[in-house]
Amino acid sequence: MHFVDKSLSASEYWRTTEKARFASHHEAHTIHTQDFADAREAVELEMKAVKLMMSSIHTHYNTFSLINRLPPELLTLIFSFVRDCFLHRSRPVPHLQSHTDPLLAIEWVKVTHVCRQWRTVALENPDLWSHIILGSDWTAENFRRSQRVPLTIDHSFPSDVERERYGNGMYAYNEDMGNLRQEIAHHRSHLRQLTLSGNSIDFWRILGSLRGPAPLLERLDLRNTGYSEDDVPRFPECLNTFAPHLRFLRLAGWEASWVGLTFKTLVHLEVEALVVPDAMAGDLGDFLGALEKMPCLEVLKLYTVLQSPPSTVTPDSVLGPIVTLPRLRKFTLSDGTSKCGLALKHISTPVTTEHHITCRITNDYEFLLPWLSVKLNVSDVISQLSITDHGDCRYARISISVWAGGHSIIPGSASGEERKQLFCLTLAPYPSSLSLSQTKIICDALPLASVEELHMSYGMFDRDSTNWLAIFSGNKSVRRAKISFTRIVSFTRIAADLNTLLMAAQPWQEGQTQPIFPSLESLTLAHVRFEHDWSIGGPQLLQWLGMWGPLTKLVLEECSIKDAMLSELRTRVPEVVMKDRSV
Image 1: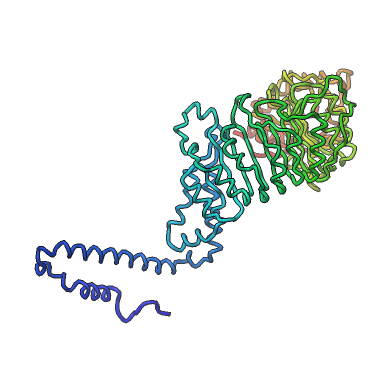
Image 2 (image 1 turned 90 degrees about the vertical axis):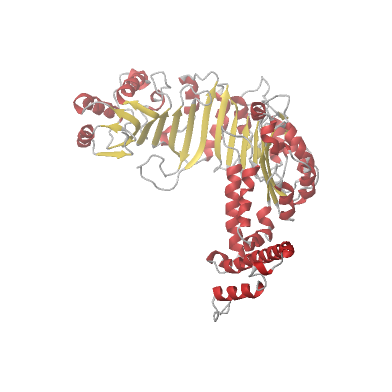
């Protein structure tokens, strides 16, 4: 198919056309001086017409480019990827910037300026404009172009710290919200996701617009960045009547009541107190009553939001009904030890629920025993235990993770069916010291007779570390063990310190000389530096390895060791595996 007349060349055609059009202008001296202005104006009009014609020809030309042969649906998908990329780049950066940069977010619109076809495709697809960019001149235009499709708003205002440091002028675009409240209220009926981060004033501007039916709202994520206890926003209790299909709710740094959070359709609930501890109004009974009305929950995350129980309560106290959450997959709870224990005791979850529990401040770990007893009795047999000793870290002293099933977490170990993590229990007392007797309260509740794999990780290792050997030494079921450190340490040092801990372990105090793990087959060491030659460090290393058990496999992971030392070691141990050797 021919789109132009090829019998005449393009250059000849346009040269002939030009001569015909400007026949009277080719000889400028034939034009009278008084007619020059009119002649120039006439030529300017010709130039504008040619410019429009060139634009039209370019449009024809672009229709034959390969990318413009793509169907509009595929172009729209590509544009959405570009949009999402710029939206991601505009969002807060941890430790650098806490606010959204709307000027960066709208950069994606430049793709619609490439050609007329791309612009037409973009404008005819309201879904592309459904992510509303606040704080720019594009806000109202976004609302208009999105038409009636479900909307997403994700915006972070400058934090109080940023406003104090740089002044409001630096973020003027965030303050110029115009009729934002009215815009959101007008489009509330098709708002699907609302994610906001700001202080109480920022939320006052926006949340008032939600006091009405929001039938499509599925996700509500609100984070208070104000750091004053007198400036904590309060969650509107009436919202649970306006959003009948809300599935995701996350509140950080808000005051609220459990009654106001009873959304029957919630699948994900996350509440965190950032400024005021115990910010949730209501006791344990109110909390349990709210959970009872949310049977669809699959993820529940609570951080320092439970009220303190009466001083007379004991681990056996019953403070409310047993609430069943039949769909719960993940339960994260961080609070005082007694609060955690009592809450866990009153919540019944499926066997497969994964628990992540952090017990803070107090060390009354007896409150955890009723929950541990139920959890371990109904779960599969424990096959793997992981202990992380964080040293004097103020946020976590010890983390205990328990797995059931067959897939190993230690590299190089045999793998069968995938293992399932039953729970991770973090102990974070204040001050951070933790006695052996306090640790044993938890460990004695674990059925250690079935543990085949043990992983001990140290953040800061010395002879004052928790003596785990006093708890686990002599366990005949352990076949694979791993000892790792968060940073590389000298073998000479850890050997001396471990020997000190070993001699303090009860079986050795009684004069027993059995290995630490009599059935041990494989030992993994991670982040250890073997600084000596075989003649100096070899005998000590062999003796030290023999103390662990009759192992037939040694794995050195990210360790530093001399070639001659490694070669000699391979003649003494049946199998030595080197992984990610450190220099």
